[in-house]
Image (cartoon, rainbow, N blue to C red):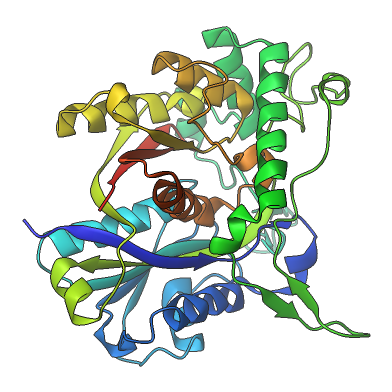
Length: 400
């Protein structure tokens, strides 16, 4: 079977909700990182790209009409290069890479451009059509995150807990205390601050010049979401999602904007275009769990993949675990036999500090893991995420 290699990639810095990227359309943002990714490999003929596969969780606004195809055209790729946008909610960006790797391993493609995009700031409000003539009933839904146009049978059978409510459920079901969640969040912020100070993310981020109404353009090249905090400050925050709860704005990921793109290639394409593989994609697995505890999803997905590949957690040197919430991150780590403060889990911080642009985050995990493997000489890395409506996804990368 043909191997699939993760080669070069670029991402935007991650913007806060209503922050620096608020005026940037998601299709333009994704087009920018596609151009930057291809600029890193001048030996690659863009016409040789078999498909552009991008994850996006919203697709109700400017990211409608297949944002992967639109961004490819906006980036200047030939019209002959196709594009598809997939939606596995938070796991979309990682699944886009997996989909590309499967096409290459099956012999149906040689080069795939994969990644993801999300502009949660620019997610629109939506309205359903009237259910009868001259109806005076009107509803409006915010598409930034969570449920809308709910199926009554879905609600009755599985519940429609909001994402923070699912984190409260995980905390209660798996015994994750408020103090442990705040400590986890503080470690994420501290590690991200150290990574930023060292210039670690410069390997990943492509600067974006953003015109201003007045004055010179702003060059956005640093993740905007990290914030200095303390355990005392985190402990003082309210728990708005449940009375006497444990989930706060401080121990949860952000609502963010960002985009990422990576080149996935076969061995033949690597040789033909003189590409520099960062890692081999060993495999991917997904698993389903009860929607009310969606945050535990990475655990069974990781276990499923490890079993399939004949590996164990002791064979994994690095883990990039998407920090949707500290509660679910800790529950997953404990189930996988990892210490709460394991230094090989999110060594540069995670989504609590860096942010979580839904469709982009999985691609960022793989990109960050591949660079860390190269820097530290790690042999294998696990990238894993929880997914709304009760799923988890996991991918394992191996040193080339």
